[in-house]
Length: 401
Ligand SMILES: Cc1ncc(COP(=O)(O)O)c(C=O)c1O
Image 1 (cartoon, rainbow, N blue to C red):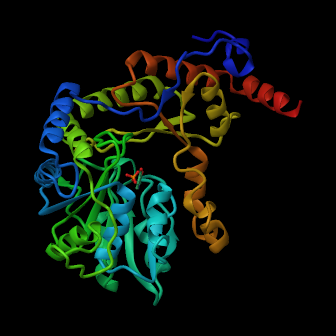
Image 2: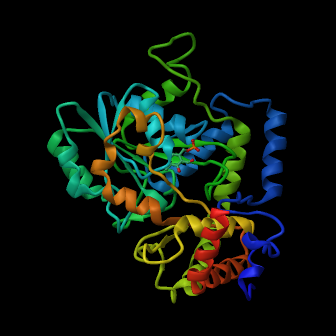
Image 3: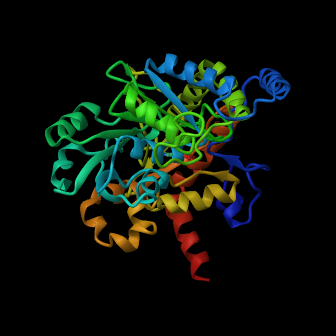
């Protein structure tokens, strides 16, 4: 607990946390079950190439998401690249700039031109009312992103897609276990893409998957992840190596078994942040629709522009205290290379993206974050905001020296 400005670490005071507190420290799950699976897979000597654990992982995911096919991949980025190819996307694709860079790189990596679309500031997902204005003769598809696990306007996007006969893929890297309109995310569009990266709430160390109800997209994805092989010695098209290995599937399966616990902890953490921060008008915690299933994987704050301390100042103050809060997804993909150079006027269409990028702050959660940690982080934030004028002045004085 800080009592005066001198006690802030940024001004030379003691650091609040002796160890860094990360936004997404991995959830581990049942260590014993994981080690048993590792023993089994070593005994079997089947380490990769569509092994039994990968098949079981795929089966469990498809069952849980009520989708016909799940094709497990080495990571979410390669899964996106393969989904883009397997659905026949080319030319120009509409995509939000407010997403993790992998969504856009996956397009560019295969020579597709991303066309950035703005977001609805209330949901942080594609603003469907502005989608049509970005469509041209060259537009060949749409990628929506269920950011923070909150679904895009899938109905609105499908309506636009139907009108212009465009395929749709959803980047569902954040949305495992979430619903929209009561329906599980996973079955929308031509395909949806999941990530099981270590920092995701269900993890397989590294991993991802394409989920789809389309038989041909599933078949092509399976072949493309395995160099284009359609059977022994028979390569039928361009492929890559996107295979998930058995050790990753062992972790993924173990992680899935703790799904309910992870969601419960994330939810508890989220509620605690809301309770502690809701009396601060300059900070709002993004909301989750209680009528839906949410995984509460992210706790995202929006810092008001009316505060004498900027979001960046708060990051500086928190980092000094060993709270590694993140500016996800600042500054927006359109301000990162190669897009900054190739599409220099993108910000003309992205006013809401620019505003949200300036305001968001993702704070630590997950099973490695205790209620006590959250209590302290909220006390720090409250203290900084109560003394925003004085802290802001002192930060500027320090910077000017
Ligand atoms: C929105 C989004 N899309 C795609 C990815 C890429 O997934 P991966 O890290 O598994 O390649 C991530 C995160 O890592 C992400 O947050």
